[in-house]
Length: 289
Image (tube, rainbow, N blue to C red; front, side, top):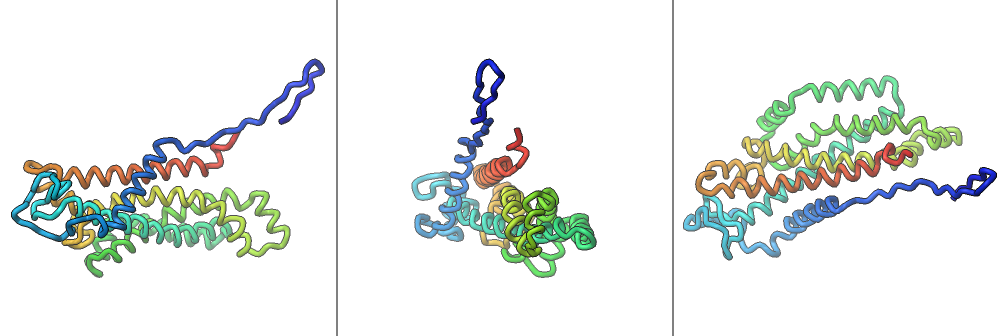
């Protein structure tokens, strides 16, 4: 606590401290993500029906004790397909941004630190990749290699590299000339040490916040591709394909489209809320007086 002596009285001045609280929305969103993740990982331990088990006598059955969310047009348990579809969405939604953050983040840090021709080459190549229509790219790769979970993850991961590169480069440019980097360089630290020990820990937090936002975007993109028939091949369930199948039963059983759509909406919203909260916490401007 600092004091100001004005000749009459001594006034105590306390430093301004801003408490950054996560808030109830953050914990609700994190709880939903945890619930979906645990339910999909341990699906085999608590689900009584398989996602591919058909019973034509129970087509479009309403929710009940045997089928908690009812059945679809082929008599398959809607809850089982919803939970196993969460596996597909989470695997692609997490693994694809991992490719982007690994390759794009690494290139962005190197480009922002070394600058010069290397930066021009990296930024130019990312601009070329951004200029290529993503849907056309996905169609071309899918037509050549076929539809699979692995190929779809790689496609979305490559498409996410430019965004992560730009975030990492922008963060590195703002840190490359800071005092701790200049001091490390003056003490004779190598480029590798500066990159790993000085820049990477500070760039990682903004990348982590952007990673969570990337997960939300990837889940939406995967759902859109599956809705168009370009995602994981049937009969493997995914939220996008379930919405596509449910549109044929909108007049008879609208829940077949609304339940997976609502689940996707809540999951994407949760990742967005968590990502926005972490981004606000890691933004240096938030700590300015």
